[in-house]
Image (tube, rainbow, N blue to C red; front, side, top):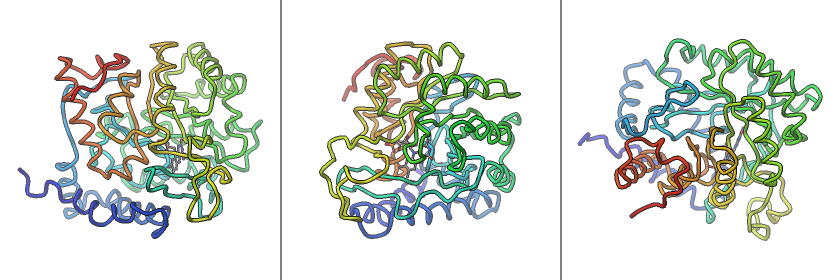
Length: 389
Ligand SMILES: Cc1cc2nc3c(=O)[nH]c(=O)nc-3n(C[C@H](O)[C@H](O)[C@H](O)COP(=O)(O)O)c2cc1C
């Protein structure tokens, strides 16, 4: 056994976990930014011998390599089905090193055409007991052009150079851009970033940019996606939807996804529904969750997000699904895959459970595949198989 095995997990358990046990204390956004500074430094200096050896140890602790986990989806090679969800690495600061945490892919962004500060702080809140979070960040990011510069500075290879990291980029609309000009906003960002995108996530579902969710309206969405598809070298496209849509709305979106030959759907973003936590007081502000703006993520979202994946899969099995929302264990990841997701993403659960969650999920999946005598994860997708102890 490698003597370093467990070192990063222990560090996380001893330094970060105690902070995550309380709503108050160190501010959630400050903690995220502090971690991102370390990750960003490591990503940009990944070739320095000392950093490279730390990353190697990280890799040994968290990476699980197994042929059963590999899939080619829309021409993209995924070493495993677990991705980092959008919103943690908004500026692609750690784009080089997400693979060393064991992720099969990472979705950076949301990026917008214009750099913007986002909403006033505080805007990210821990709900420790529920292993959930409320955020109203509002697409704080350095803008699409700066994301390219950041990739260049970190030495991120272009997609065509067969790089060893799989990156999705999540695109949104700038706050100052009106709905009628939204198309141009998305197109400008995409034009800058297409050379780096393994896939593009078209985000029309964040609850913290006024009017953005109106782009889920089938007429508007169809128009937007049509324009995007005409871009030269357009990457595979995934539309990221809200969990607050009715099944009827979702069916309409599925129809247009099929009509317009869009590759897939990412379900779901954070929820405006308080998911049973309406009466829960936010300790940081003294207000009830029902009185606060922002989207809810984490464990309370698990069932709703899973039902949406199940529903879409029942409508059409050819739409590639990326399942996200409340995944925090091998069991919940397996459930999402068996409900129809080809890939899954984690964010809030990864923060609460720590980086060990990625290898734990992957080992759990491999075990289930063995129990069910399956040779590749593809066989489990939409199988509705239950977790077997
Ligand atoms: C602090 C925070 C910021 C987020 N920012 C974005 C974002 O910029 N773009 C996006 O598409 N989703 C964003 N999300 C949503 C996540 O990508 C994910 O869809 C959602 O949190 C549900 O997954 P989870 O329960 O595993 O966190 C954000 C989530 C959180 C908690």
